[in-house]
Image (tube, rainbow, N blue to C red; front, side, top):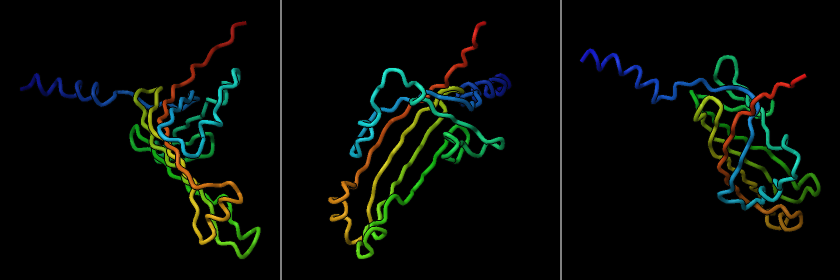
Length: 164
């Protein structure tokens, strides 16, 4: 029994991850599960713009939030971070006060550190419209409601020291 009590903490550490998530720059690989918004069309490989696939991930000093690209703040719970953002992108009444159509976007991110320098998860995006004139405005402005879902894998970029 005493032997079991001594090995349980070691087993718990090994199975529970036993690592500390790290802040830094991460390369991003996204794979479309469903891409009704055509987001993947805008992410073509340009051959040399590696920076376009790198994102900054910073853990707050108190360990309660993660900030991505100095803009998106997510709640952090252990190794898991989640964020949901909704923002209005177009109100048709600003162009014609008789129109009732407000377009907004929603993004949902759910990620988990699987190792100190690796993160995996999901990203969802949607464009929605509320109002009686959504269909007409959507046709005129080419802003159709849509949704996209991606799986995401992030790997920390290793610092390369310059030799001189």
